[in-house]
Length: 624
Image 1 (cartoon, rainbow, N blue to C red):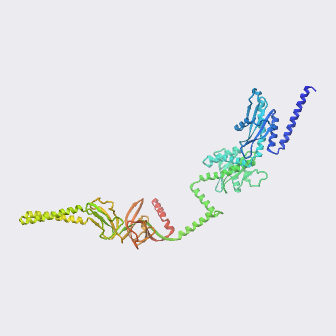
Image 2: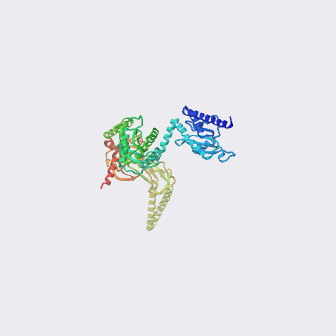
Image 3: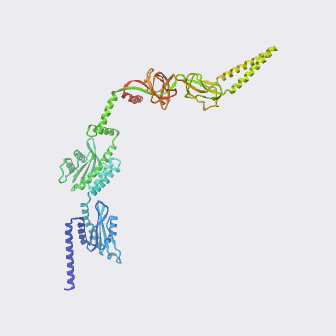
């Protein structure tokens, strides 16, 4: 056999071996029972399709983690498993296809090269494919990259089929939150709803997405995708609102045309909407906050397209998150009257509806308490700040100009009539008296001498001087008698303390002590002008003083004065009363609170009359 024939046979044998290997790979690919078998057979087919592949690897993300692990190699047992590490890591980082020329003495198209293409699901990297190729031209290299991109679709299908259900739910929720973020970015419902509807229409390929809010038992259209303004009275807009009402009335998602095997639903308004808009499919999802429907979301797809299960799951997630936000935005747009009416309606529903036993019990107790205080009566009393005063209060002032010598008594001490409570220094007065006594004696002797000499003129002069000296002596004796301050009657010293002023000078007429009797008190009450008209002489009351808070003293109103005093923004009138009973330890100067008994009145009036009277006065002031 010639060498040419041998070469032809060798080529034919190689082709047959490759065909056999490819057919075996196809059988493994169609009969794969695990992800590893699927990836291994797919990699073998991909290497056969591209040709001249010296090394290949498929790396996938481990379910439930972020770790990337190799699941298939070409050949199955390579001698070096890290050859493609650099190019695959770069493809994962850049999230796009990467081509690397290996360092060698060859340049350009004569150098070996490496390809890598990332696998992404919903924009997130889930794996990467890496291949090392024999030298080839740039055009063939681009064809190999394109074949690798087309072939990676099989692995993306595998990843979606074997995706972790929890991960899919997380991705769906993440996408729903991204969509609802457009609703939160705007302050008003119209602007935010339009942003949400536009974003949702773009993501799901819808012709139109409408958002409505419940008002007065009907759904009103509030936002439309790709449109800031719309005519609410247009037939199409009315058809959308009817479709929303239809879904809200059934409290469930309405899909038209219905999915295969779905539970039958009322969809007359939806079929009419399809005729009006010439769309291919429509779905309406109620928006709820808890058990309360707050609005609806309607999506329309163009002719020839329907809603699949994945799209409906995403719409359900968006509706679940958007419902409470729509309710908050609608509530924020209400006026004060609407807020009050809504609060009253909500409270009434809780009172008459099922559950909420605590609110019902509280309402019943409140009603019973209101009835009790409306019809029950009690003693109406006027409260006033009070001060205990002596009925007679004597002031002891300085009789002369002098210095304080001693003060055995001070404020708070009980004294007897005639008891010394203070003394002045009398040394100068005594010296003055001695001097005047000497002068009187001298003048008396001079008078006698003048009379003996029968000098009538001299006798008259000396006699006048004698009268003057005797008058001065009488004045000094009177002042000496007043150097002692005594109590005018049995009582208590209300004010005055000279024990800290011994030796200090005092001026004549300066008040030194105030003494009040112990057995004769009066109560001075400062009654607010709002209650002044209720008080008349003869009414009884009770007094509690700060010093003895646990004891009550009875009194009777004796006098109402017209003297008013403004203090701390209040205008009060002075009312006097006398004690009616034992005085106990009560002392003048004590302060407290007195309550004057008026009469029996309704408890509700007692607690509310101040407010109602103020409102009446305020209204009268504004009445022309």
